Length: 317
Ligand code: 3EB
Image (cartoon, rainbow, N blue to C red; front, side, top):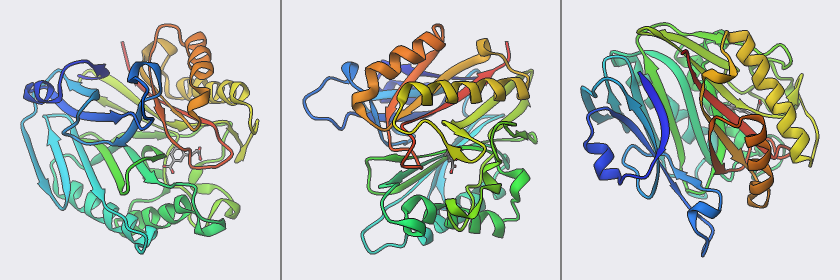
């Protein structure tokens, strides 16, 4: 079906395997520290990765791959993984670049044999830079919503997503698609992101709290980047432990709402704003999920008052 894990094999070796759908490469941005001892950082999520690698592996073979509309893609009978990166320089308009990235992604996917979005991953440089409505994340939200609207993707059709910072210069967007129509889910404890009030920016973030789909004989669940937000408020400013507990409660509500259990979680991906919080964060996550693979990444979170965000990939037993 679909598995997600960290591999010690080299990228070349993994890419030779016919059942590798995607590789995510992590680079350590801290100088002089070993990768095992610190938080790996997503620099770019690329299909051709290096160093520390995360793999999306299939139980079926990849049947085609290519580059179109600046999208690098790879697909099997049931899944298609797409990634696009747009460079950004000082003069570039964040909103315009995001719009163009999403336009290309949506155009490619609409013309492909697998048009149903299961999930997006967005990596945004200097995500919290800029004041008020000029903040990069808010400008990113404008560009994304504009492209979705033009492609007639409305609130209820937005899939699960994450939007975090990274340490490259460009905007990278990855997506996973399939052939069957998925279902999108809300979290009763949180306002739907696409209905956030105006204070969070001119365009609300375009994502669902979770997306599920039955592909073949398995049910899959993608839980969006989930943080310490109740209603629409960020809660427990500056307190890592309480932010993790609130995030965990939100995840448990989403599991319940989508009909999944804790034991169905295949991978947890933890985005952590401060490297210094790594050990404490790992300790708490391991306490909450002793048997689950957790991947820690050093990344800024889209609201500057959030310290941590967690996403999950679940698969029915
Ligand atoms: C939140 O709940 C936290 O803009 O795609 C989480 C997941 C967040 C996805 C996105 C943003 C996004 O609002 C931030």
